[in-house]
Length: 130
Image (cartoon, rainbow, N blue to C red; front, side):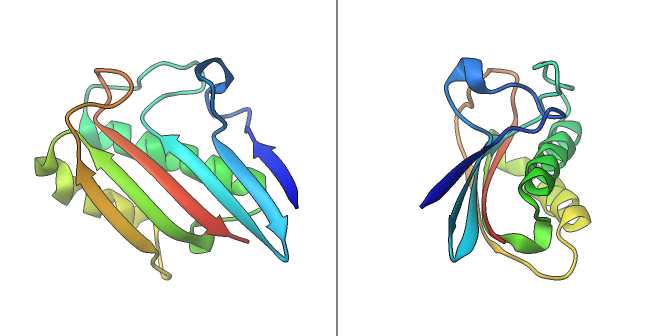
């Protein structure tokens, strides 16, 4: 089994926090497991305190990781989304539709009391098959 760390330079550096943004495993098909993405820019700073802005940035980071692995949103088969306020679900659905056009993936949306940093409002993790 070949395992490849996915660490695009246009996404913030996750190494200091002890995880990879993505892992690709190639055994017949290439599987890409993408760690939780959120509204953090390439410098490691939270982009805004606004849910929609954070959610959009999380999807942009997800797109970068997918592209670095050689994929796109149509390759995503599983998405798990964590939000700190379920009242943001409608906004989440609208933003998700901007990135997932055509093929949909299986998805779970969960409200949690907190994420890794107190100012974060959303986190997305995904699995893709390339």
